[in-house]
Image 1 (cartoon, rainbow, N blue to C red):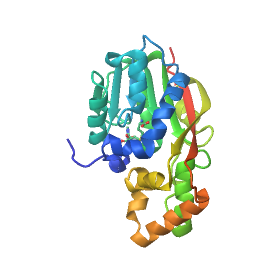
Image 2 (tube, rainbow, N blue to C red):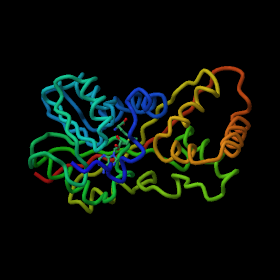
Image 3 (cartoon, rainbow, N blue to C red):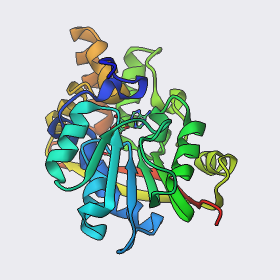
Image 4 (cartoon, protein in one colour):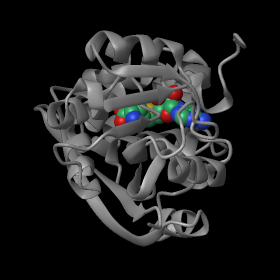
Length: 266
Ligand SMILES: C[S@@+](CC[C@H](N)C(=O)[O-])C[C@H]1O[C@@H](n2cnc3c(N)ncnc32)[C@H](O)[C@@H]1O
């Protein structure tokens, strides 16, 4: 196997517990909402595409049982965490653009917070369509980066105040705007595609808890945070604290995801 992680997985080479403190706290809350939107119900088999350490995988196991769940991710540390957390699930190293699964092997294929990291989203959508049986469901969700993901918005607004060239995810990444996943799915030949929004939140004891998530170096925000000089990083944190109004008590940040669900034609 190629030892270099694939492009989208490069900033996800961390243990699952570290991811949880940054993004997993949101994706665990999102997973049951997303599973409801996708129509995950007992008796089905499901493929979790870009499973990470297994936030959605866990919900699929609760609803379908471990033998009915297959999970795929290109990050080997995440695959190891997902396997350890969900014994009995078939967890494979692989990427959405070339899913290591047979044709029509599943009733559902779901990608939670993954499409924007793929190098070829059209190929990913087409592979998810191939992976489900005729009539099977394909679902994906991505944070609405411009307004609906307060934790990332706060980070990028603070970072832009210090570094105007900061790679704000709202500018660099796709599929967080209305209609984008629907368009992708329709072009991939899926039918009856519908979009919804899903809302979750996470509560932080203090700014240190929030800031430690960025220092974990995960995803575009964490990667940017660690790339800064010590002085600039301290300035970003100051900006962020100001934007939060210097909280003296716990505070809650909301997150909205765009979700689309379609079907492979029967
Ligand atoms: C934000 S995390 C989401 C993980 C998990 N689905 C969750 O909700 O917690 C993004 C995930 O996409 C994976 N990823 C990146 N590029 C990918 C690709 N080309 N195909 C499949 N997964 C990919 C990363 O390794 C990472 O696990």
